[in-house]
Length: 89
Image (cartoon, rainbow, N blue to C red; front, side):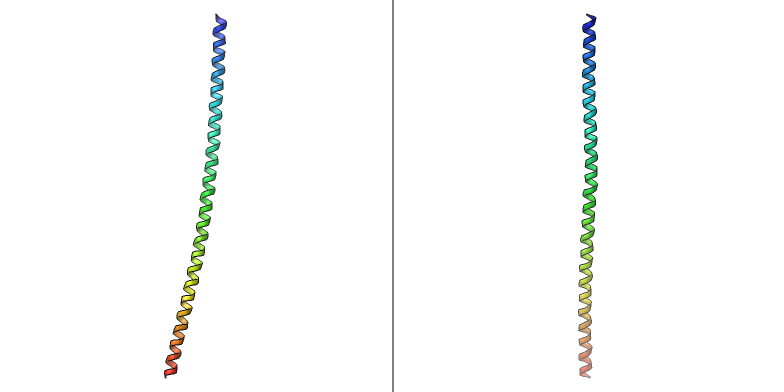
C-alpha cells in the first residue's frame, strides 16, 4: 500500500511539474508576443509621423510657391498700372 501512495505522489508531482512548465512557457510566449507588438506599434507610429511630416513639408512648399506666384502677379499688375498712369501723363 505505501508503494501505491508513493507512486501517486510522484505522478501528481510530475503532472504539476508539466502543468507549471506549460504555464511558464505560455507566459514567456505571451510576453514575447507583447514585446513584438510594442515594437510594431512604435515602428507603425514612427512611420506615420514621418509620412505626416513629409506631407506637411510638401503642403508648406506648395503654399509658399502659390504665395510667391500670387505676389509676382500682383507686382506685375501694379507695374502695368503705374506704366499706364505714366503713359496718360
